[in-house]
Length: 301
Image (cartoon, rainbow, N blue to C red; front, top):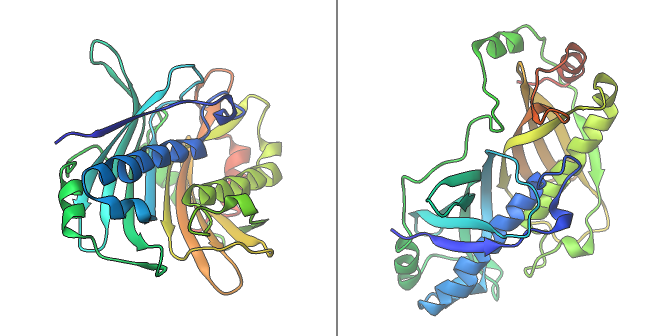
């Protein structure tokens, strides 16, 4: 089956402190490709109701290689992985394709989406014509996000390292303000923006607890993350709480978990895998003993 192909331009502001496209920005590229597929091309094939509303229930993305700024746009291939009565799945690859057919993949991702009736403010079932259009892109066995990414692997010693550390119940808490321009056309916080909230909490965690454990050339990069959207968030003047804790400590990587909530409701649950990174050598590195000790205080397998 054919894939939908969209070419998305890179912006200088997409880069992070390492000179790579920031992990959150990849989700923006996916969103631009998804909007092009569902809001522009699907209506031309008779599935115009998809353009009226689709909400994201879940995102998962694996980062395969760093992407640097260049004037040429990046290619995003999108396909359908499944179609159910009230939801459908999308797969993505963010990549370059050389004239000889060589493919350099920077990220692989998957989403679960739900059709949304904007007028009645509720989810709805997939119509027969929408199903036909979506199934024209069906590729159930496409690539799936996963793996440590950025060349990092997990060795048997990583499991043993985790077992030696006594679990803790300490979680890092970060208050994140909701800005008015965080909202999408539905009046809810945009799905990509939640990944920004996770990043803000993660950076605050690193500055507070890991900065003294690392040299100037040492850092970490996101290799994989998964977000599950439980409830929409409308504009609010009170901040959201982002809890962060560690679920695994390996040789050169560690896993974290998050909850975005207020005093009453959990809105998003997420997980992430981070790889210790040598900025000067542009490659993964082992975690230092000081980093491991700092992370162990927040370990909650």
